[in-house]
Image 1 (tube, one colour):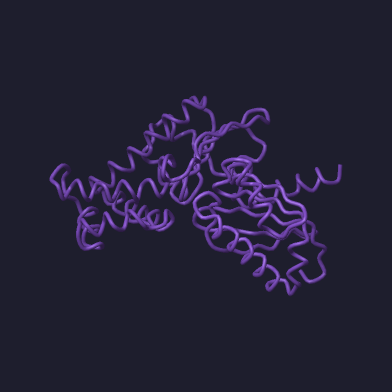
Image 2: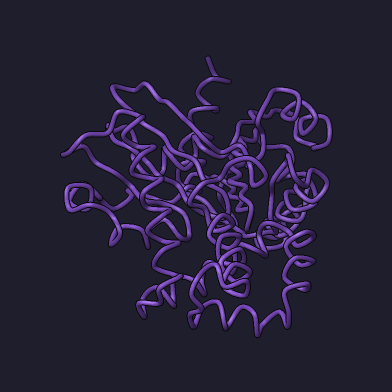
Length: 291
């Protein structure tokens, strides 16, 4: 793409990774950087964004200012209020920015402009409804107080189940035995949970889904609890039988098998990825600037 004219920068920042795309006449070129949650790790988020800019410049053999000078649309996890957005604005070297949380990028990518519902369950989670162009979001308040059915939520529940099984409050299973062996003892599990980053605890969800596929009792219970919470939340958002549901995020797609038959038949594939949603919103931002 050496002869392309570049127009904008789109950023989709999440708790596991931050993806950046430089838009041009022929499409976009993208790179992946580190995690980005402006609420739980502001400085790390800034580093991930700037590292991504550097990667894009290297990939395209451009000076860094050629990337930084583009109008930038950012959908960043943890932008829970205007104060955090303004703090990011002051910390980043882009002349024109539109900063929002990452929910709109994921919704735009999943549904485009169509009506439907989204249960986004990655490192964190949120839920959304879109009807006739109107959008409603719930959740996304972070790992300490929210993020139900997220990979981090699953990871925490698995560690808790391991402690309960050790106490004899729950039955041991291959999942809890594997986690106890992995950490060595219960004290190490408690210490780990108290300091490990949410993205690291979220990695335990992969182990849970693997054991659930093998009918492990504790893994199944955790996955069914999460699916029940998704069901309950979507119904509160207005979902009813026949209305489309997109399951997005790293663990989102694993929940379909745990839904009721009516909800299972409503699950549809996402139209595109959250980065594609951020790209579409970056193009919208360009149109706003030109008006």
